Image (cartoon, rainbow, N blue to C red; front, side, top):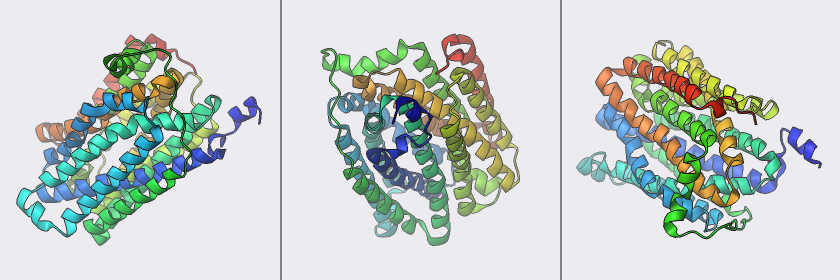
Length: 413
């Protein structure tokens, strides 16, 4: 197949066997993680009925993530990325089993210590995620030729967003109809399936380093690279602050319970709605990539995301809320694909682990710390006001990046 044909083939990356195995493995693990997120959120809310307690879920995962992620990026560039990814997958499976046991067989643990055991297990998954993130994305890039990297990242996004749909919906419905124990059982099973599929992928060699570095230089190389590249830095910053302020996912249990009155079943669909939009947009982008005038498209997409969050705050109809969240997912997916492509195209192969670790810091700042911010602001300002504030700040961040990052604004891939 010629280079030009590969570039115009919407399914080019998906035709590679190891990449397909990677996609399916990541899909099952992500479904499990997203299911667990919904179940843990509903369990914590049921035990505490407190917005801040929901925000603490994200905080208990992001603190260990931050502590290990730079070291994890260094490890991902000197140790088999397949082995790291497989090991962390197994740890996720063990943690899911732990949540199952304390929720079904050992009720006395929760009765005695309250939510602390749940937060403690989430803390361990935060450590695992710190190592998984840089190894997984760096390994995925090694599975496809460079000329179809954008296509591979698009399909990777399709897989991830499809899991984002399936996980919350399944988690919410299973939790609502069959209980928390059944939900955690399925989470454990899917995590193990993901690990078994990943074993079938052929390992790839560690990229050779182009220069000698001591441990400190290696640990900080990713930071130095990102902070000296205006395009990569501004793309990551835009995503970090936009989702940090605009992420209302963590308080959806409250919105579902107090505003829409739909319970755990409705929560599953609300959590799935952004991913439905994201998968739809991912498929569209597989045929019509957004890389021409990528910078302009990125700014437009994040602005649209912020506006959707503001509109969501005022919805009182369940189906309208689903529609607005679906639109937010469509805009967010454009941002994900463009930002991911920018980062990988501009990063040397021997530094992908460390740069991916830095990217993971930005992403976790936006997601987990964003969850904590949402919980705190909901406590201080009230539910609706906090959502409006977050969406408005997202739009303001876009304006600031547009003004101070002209290279990103003019970027075309």
